[in-house]
Image (cartoon, rainbow, N blue to C red):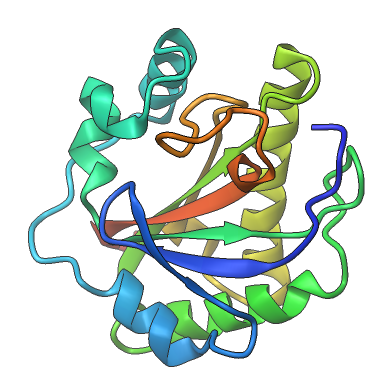
Length: 193
């Protein structure tokens, strides 16, 4: 990804297909909690390396067409576009408001018991290997910011980068809306106490 993301917005998804857009004025802790808190069944066990390899080997197929991703595609999730410095993992200052809202929601009593998968996705602009590495580093940067700056337990967060794979269905893989971070509710968090 050699271009910076042009704006920050939250999109809430019923599954992989994004049903609506919330502008910066509409984004609230309440909407995030409501969007991520609709887990009605036990989430499947996941293996990050299997998910990563399946995304890479699946080419540009949507999440719902890959066996292991399909198992988590219907879990409560939201897609977040975070501004990063161009070709960097440095989060732009204006995106910390969005991260703060996400962190507040993750601290909310309705979500504090859940763990989340942070999926970094890139557009197909640029070199494939570079996109994969950058998406992974950006997912890790989101996890780190949430855990260090906003005190979200890092054991509740799993970061994975899938490069330019898993594009939004029906979109051009080079489109800027494929530069995104996706949060998926993975179910109940069990601390090691």
